Length: 385
Image (cartoon, rainbow, N blue to C red; front, top):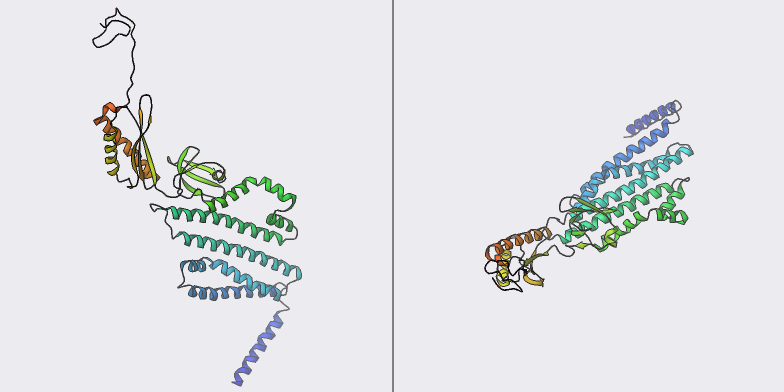
């Protein structure tokens, strides 16, 4: 045993003497580069060990933790390399300027790393959270609520992370530190000027927060905006995209839904009551019409069985107004149910009750007592022919 230790000491002395003879020959940059390269390799090897341990630790955890470990593979590698280099820079024989530059670069890399990890964790959490909800359900109120809130808040938090990270990085530079402070605090006269210049952006940003909290609209809501009926297709950080029924897209600023009135047909539930208006002659048989309308609605697959009514809602000079109410599970189905009721009722009126169609009644006055008239036509203010 003693002989083996002596041999090991001799080998170490030989290697040490070889290094001492080699150092004067190497250029000045070789030793710092070797130390930093060694620190880099230590960081990479540490990453492999740590990542393997984390993967094993979350193997039986829920989807969020497994996804977080898998998606943060590159940020974790960068973080461990930055940590190893932070230890290697003070050890490496660098001049003061070089050491300061390296420490500054590592500090910026660390800030970028933190923002990167926060963005990744936010995206993973949102994805995992929204997997619980399905927008394609018949009554997707809860799903649309969570999808809308998540998308708006993710964009908002993403912008906050980016602004804070950019401000922190700017504050590390002496020459532009005030820019970072202004960007982060928006103080002073310059902040007021910038506030006025960015008023539309800030207005939509605040409107986005209000939409996420109060939710006057959600993804998939059926709305009427600017006289156009459509569905909320997308909500971004500055505007809302409405998919109109004929596949056109109406792009509206976020602030519009805070400041202007609009119709939301699916605010609390997807079910809607469809209205069909009929204009018939005063001689129409309402009882027979009600029975036929009931037969049409009950025989339709689109009716949800909740609401049905036939009512005379108005009388006019030549027609009376008859309103048919029927409910369906959502806006598109309600529209189709209304069309079906119109088509079948007008066909029935034409076939079974043609006298109920709107008619014109006029009294004709003819001035011509000596003029021959056809039988059955009376001449006012004159003798009958």
